[in-house]
Length: 277
Image (cartoon, rainbow, N blue to C red; front, side, top):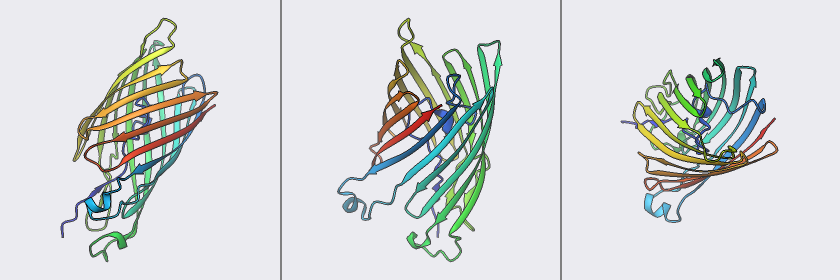
């Protein structure tokens, strides 16, 4: 029997574009204004009423929750996070820790390098697979490594990273779940639209390449007085539309994102809560 592999999670979360720290360990959301940032998030998926009739099956479970801490001590940046991803025949728990260092050159140029160790605990449920599974272990543990680098000059951001450097997989005799090795490149620029620097427009381009996939994303993010932002992104290969809105008040942050694509049957709503201190 030929078993088609399922790619491991490690997807881009549908939040505001400039939070590339999810897939580049050299990037940090902690600035000089504060030293710590905590976040929790979850998403809700909506399946159409005729899904069962059209696909001849029940909608599979799609649960996604997580929590993360980021910190900075001088030029040292670090983070730790937990992520749970539920799927039709497996549940995945991911724990990761990252460390990076930012070099300041002539007070204007900033170059950061970072690495991240992640461990995926994958609980496979053979009863939900339509095949013989005597050979399959129900629990798999797969460690992996991410590396990244980022350069900043005023409003310019350039980043390059590699996720799942080992390209590990969870299976005994076949690659049932593959944690695909991916390379990400991002570029963006922050333009101030007024002299007081209260309104900022940030266009971005994100490109990523995997062993079995190539994709690009274009987007805009508009920030008002650093207290609120709205954004839109379009993921080319998936024809996916992503709309975002966010607010910040006295260190508390709220971000909401909605995404949909004609090639998939579900629309997702993601909510992120955070606190900076």
